[in-house]
Structures are given as structure tokens and as C-alpha cells.
Length: 195
Image (tube, rainbow, N blue to C red; front, top):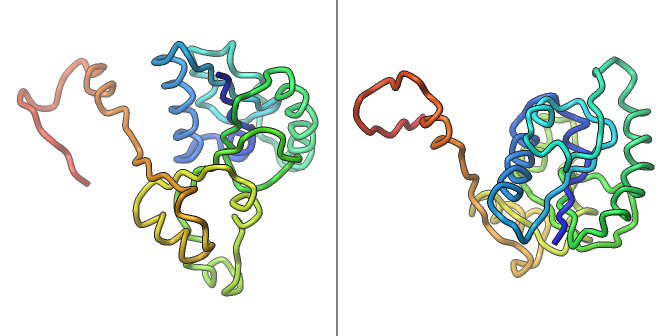
């Protein structure tokens, strides 16, 4: 089974929560499961996480320096080339990394909703009460992942999405890896840090 993560978030962020989330999913799938192959198709990307991957052969793309005014051109290049590479890989599904739509839907589509900050606090973003930036992608998605029960409730409230289409999957962490990689532990006993 081939799973594709698209270019969108890797073109938007050098670092950040959403790009790290998708990068970690990509790495975990490839490390842990022989039945699934995850690929990131981002012909042009700015993201630093992708350079650190041990699965560089499963990242289709090249890192470019982020220079002013390159966003529109990079987006066009990615849109054109992504469709070509997606067809080559024949994915079982595409997990989109952002809410914009750049091509006709041909494969099953999964989308993750992290929060509804833009909808809830629309005034802070200079938007009207009926601002719904995720509407189109949610309409065509085959499945939606929400990162919490609260996000799921907000999603249903603002978008009237069928609950059967939604799964709540809490964010994992790489804390164990962090602890195991430390040379000098802070304490000599087990502890839990809550912030």
C-alpha cells in the first residue's frame, strides 16, 4: 500500500507543528510497517525536517532556499510535477497536508484537522462570521482525522460534517526517543513533565 503526503505544508513551513506532524507520520510508517510505504511528493520544498529523513529515497523533491517572491512559482511547479509523480506511484490514498485543492480527486483522500482557530476567531483574522476555509477539502475527503474530541466537536459545529467520516487520533510524541538519546539525564528517577 502506497501512502502519499502532498507538498503543501512542506512548501509553507521551514519548521512547524503541522509539518513536523506529517513528517513524523511519514517516518513512523516507513520505520514500523513493511506492508505500507509512505512517500512525500514535494518537487520543491523549504522544509528542514525533510533533509533529516533516513528515508530520502521516499521523498520526491529538492530543497530550495526560501526567497521572497518564489512562493507562487514554487506552488505552480509543485502542482504540475506532483500530479505526474502521484500517477507514477499509484497511491492507495493521499493524506493531504493542507486545505487547498490543487487537482481533481482521483484517489481516496484523508485530511487532518488540527484546530478551528480561523473559524472560531475569524474576527482576529479579518474574516466574516461565515469564513469556512476548509469547506471544499472536507467535502471531497473520504476520511477526516481530528487531533482531539474538542476539535471534532468544533468541526461538526462549524462544518456539519458527518460524524462517521471522522476519527479522533491524538498526537503521539517522540519523547521516548528524546529520553533515550540524552547522554546526561536531568534526574536519576522516572518523572513526568507537564506544561
